[in-house]
Image (cartoon, one colour):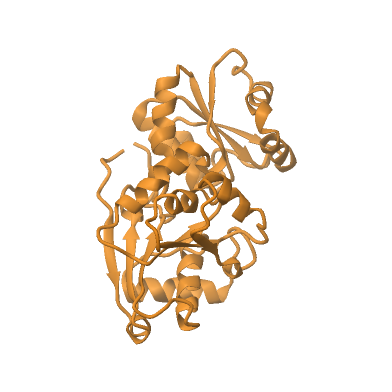
Length: 299
């Protein structure tokens, strides 16, 4: 796994921005690493440190078939020599179902596939998750397991995501990011100065609990807003309009987007600019949280 690069703050120019007297920049976390993509660097940082200091034997985490978190965790654990297990939603899957699962397996992550209903039940009873995993997977009963939540969420991930704000030189009015679990936004909002505001674009549909989850993670700070109308039908859902937007934006600005997270983020922010949501003379930092993985290969 190559050494991490420093993040780039890339200015973004467009007549739409100048007409509204807005200064727009993109924090390119997608350039940090080819496999530990974007915000995953920050979400995993303190979890991996905690594992290495805990005396635990195996790291266990969870995800879907196309999870960036599974890819990032597998790559990071290979680099650090950490034994790891990925519990994958979907018992119809296997290690060769797609390039991401194959990559994780090639990196040494042991994949265990379970029924979707069982997966939901497993994550619901969080106080018994260690025991449930041991019941589920042969050979883990007598081992000390470090449980890393789905998507890398949790207090240590929030701690890491606070450091995203430290990567930005100078001042800004708004900082914007896509939201799944809300962990990244919680970390960012807890590191803001007075007068600064975080904007989140949820990529899941109807996640009414997300605001309360973020408030629990960021200590009750209300310096953020969720713009719920840009999910395009739900997680990993898209349509021709969003696909066209991602392609056109990438060509115009030399900035790669994908429709799961970053496409929805940039679509939503540009739509809000057109609707005069942001006061003139504001400065915005849009956080590119990755999701564009280079050709997968775990040599």
